[in-house]
Image (cartoon, rainbow, N blue to C red; front, side, top):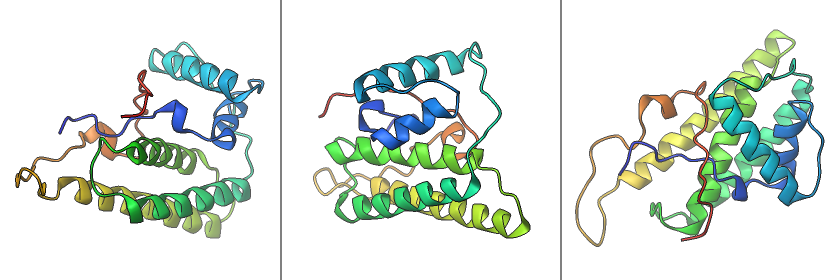
Length: 172
């Protein structure tokens, strides 16, 4: 397994997730196709620091609700995921996981209770990430091999890292 396991496949982000990425930067919305193109261009610009983000204006409660919805979906996807990174569901899992990490990290808790809620959400996301990584590292039923090397480089296992945007979002 390569060191770049988690990729943000923009074609796997839903409308609300694309809207969030654009609205958080003060950009206008459009059709889903237009938003995917805009988000892809924004992320490419993010890598070379040419794009400046606006002060974060989302309400903490809205972030919590969005992350809760995403966590429920990720938990459902995990149930049917067999550890095969070539399976079409893995691209959605990967995109959703990176979106959730980014959204939790950008959230702005107001009270001490909010900080606890934020920390709990981050822990839940990272626990799911760890569980998924464990499923992926299991011995292959076909080859019998075990990959004991971590499939995630340190830049992907930390919640503050930038996502890797996949230019190839076609299904396998």
